[in-house]
Image (cartoon, rainbow, N blue to C red; front, side, top):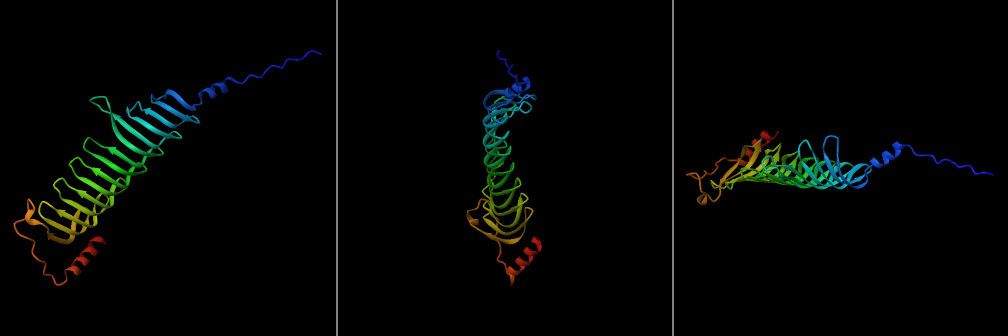
Length: 235
C-alpha cells in the first residue's frame, strides 16, 4: 500500500516576524520611530536590566537600571552642555517608576546641588542643599520644599535652626546673628520673626556688633506676654 505523504503545515509569516521582533535579553542599539536610541537588556519586549538611552529631542542620556520599560533602581542622567557639546552629570541616584526616588544627588548648576532623599520625583525626606550664594540647608523636605526641622547656614556665618513649612521659616526657631553677636529665639511666620527673645552673645568679638547692648527686660511676666503673642500668631 503506497504511503501518503502529509504536507507539513507552514506557520504564517506574520508569526515568524512577530517572534523576531520580540526583544529579549541583550540587544544591539535600537532606534525608536522618534529617534531615541536604547542599548541594553530587554524582557518581554520592554527595557529591563542594564541599559543606556539617548533622547533625540533633548539629547539627554540615561545610563543605569530599567524595569518594565521604566528607569528603576540606580542610574545616572546626564545632559549635553550647549557650549562644549559634552555631557554633564545632572542626577545620580535612585529611581522608581521613571522618577527620582530614594537617595540621590541632583546638580542644578555648577554652584547648586542637592544631596539627599527623593520621593516620586521631588525632594522629600532628609537632604542637603547647596545654593549659588553659598548658603547651605540641611534638614527635612516635603514636596520639593523645606519642611520640618532644618538648619540654614548663610555665607556670613549667620544661621537659623528650627522648623520650616512651605519653604519658609515657620514655627519655633533660633537665629544666630554671628556678625552682630546676637541670637533670637522665638516664633516665625512665613520667614518673619513675630515674637521671641533677643539676647547678646559674644558681642565683644562680633565684627559688626551694635554700639549698645540689649537692655534687660523689665516686664513683670514676660513669659505670659510671649505665650499670648505666640498663640495669636500660630492660631
